[in-house]
Length: 296
Length: 131
Image 1 (tube, rainbow over the protein chains, first blue to last red):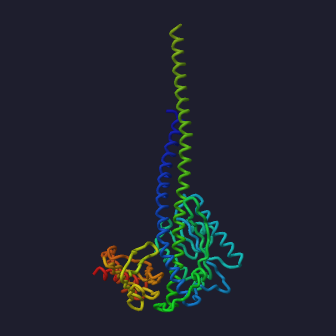
Image 2: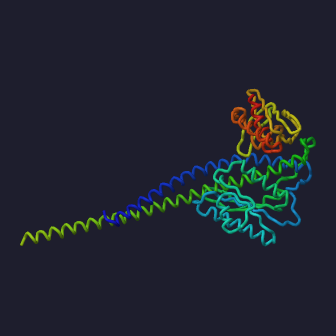
Image 3: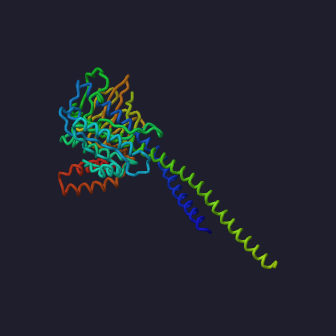
């Protein structure tokens, strides 16, 4: 076999094995989108009921008062929680959410405040580390299937930092999962919690409404839980988005590999034909030479 | 008239259905809810939750949270919002025993280990329920 043919065949094999990997990743991501979507759905009843409970407290105490609801008069530092993935190979997923985060950080700077960065996912961590941006805290190793315990841990750390004035506000940049085809990097303010978010419509307070312990203590437990639920929702939405982005990227990669294999196969065929032609020419030339010799 | 009961955690709906009575452990003591109960919001302690109806008795463990009673058009609805909850049938007693021992060891080393204290309470609640 000629050198050219050997080289092309080797490339075909290499592309084929890459294609097997990208196709497998595409299928895995597709099944994970579904699971992640189910988890987003499963988290909803709790969030709805928790909000209802807070609305009841608001209705019966007139107005809510709690440190987590208070706008600080002269904020100094603003926390930005950036939700990225642990692995790449997800197209522009991380680039989009990091661009969004940079927008939030720029916004903080134009208010002449100091941004404090929190990041989840290895990609966010290495992005900020590479640029020499210090991270207040970072968490990784769960971006595809975030467990609730992680949301709890992150939420508690954030509340602690808000409580001791390490940050005076908290924003979160994450990716909203609209559908498998519409992913949107977005940002929301998480702290302080806007009172209208948890007040609902003004109803008539029920005369015999009971709180055990008092409404203030209940609120004290409800609000941190509310923040944790929001962090959890952001992690889940991002996980679904990450898998959707990866599926799309891997699908494109598989299609490219198919295309490349077609082109390479054509090249291999041509090389093989060239080789055969040369061989025939050699044989014909040789036999003609022989005929000439024996004919004389 | 039965109660409409939903036991939910951030991760899933643990149980939902109709019941005659719900008994839970609040931070200030036990609370029992019957149909027609006044609206109520209780903070729950780590402990057992009991739901009775004519067909079955459901036992569960909740790791703190809230119990919320509301009434709408004559139906009384009870929502149990727990950060974690397990039905008796889902509890892995062996795992709970192992965790109990681990947290007890940690508490011996450091009596102020808050996490271990909470973990121990959760493990004990599970062992206690299964017996």
